[in-house]
Length: 398
Image (spheres, rainbow, N blue to C red):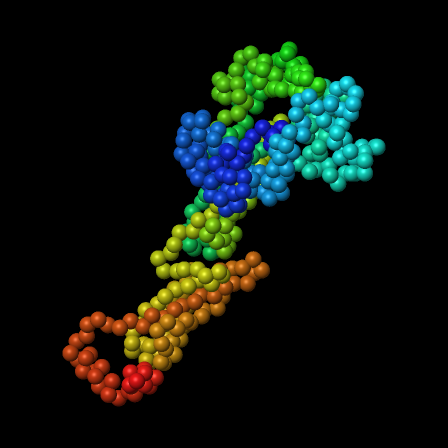
């Protein structure tokens, strides 16, 4: 993304948030737009695809604290009116070149002590680079840069079974996103033909115009800024050089991945422009609830019902895990709610250690008993001491 893009595009407006929005508000707004306009949900809808791309571009800047700060500073600088039309250099009538004003930031000989430290303030470009990418025709300023551009990042969402999230798995992920046209290999021309150089801009993609006391560049209207003109358009991409296509990649989800975790796959996003590197793929993980197991950090939880007799007398309890069953000893006199621990049967940590299985015992009281069972319980009550309720009785006697 060029510095000019940052000046021309209001990323806050694209996401529909205020400039003071928090990171969570920005993320929430982006996800809502991404869901509504994702190409998978809007096949053949070019407007939705454009909105999806714009939202992704805005989120790429505003979700990064460093990029967001640089973006705000740049737009604030231009919004302040410091470079209004008609500005003059000193008292003379020479033409004003904004790159001269900030030339000291480039580290060039004779620069006023700034050195190279300030050369990357805005999105990897110094002040002189920023101005020279917008204004041309000034005294000695370099021409606009039209080099390789990094591809956009892509977001996807995957829902995993509980066991797959704990133990790790590899799943195929099918993405529908822009890519290079295989028919014309990205040049937009019909096979057997080649684009010709634009006669208006001579291949630069920009036209210089004088405006008041300085000159500036704007995209060539003849070639729409491409620098070339396609006489016979590719039948597959209709001259755009790109198509929306499906691609399937295998994604490895590590053991212990948690619900809500975001996995980054470097270089698996949209392809770059003009030979630039591809963007990244971010996979948002959602984990289905299991009908038996739960999870607390690196421990797996399980609730097991036991009878009154098992709680009083004790028992050996066989319980399932995500691999093989284990047997736990329930000691006599175990109260309801007690937790037993099966070590090493939980979630594997990054350091190689494994969490535990925590089994919570739930003593169940029968709602209906036979006459024989009732007689046995009454006899049991006579033979066992009453519950200790001394403090309760004392309070009642007040």
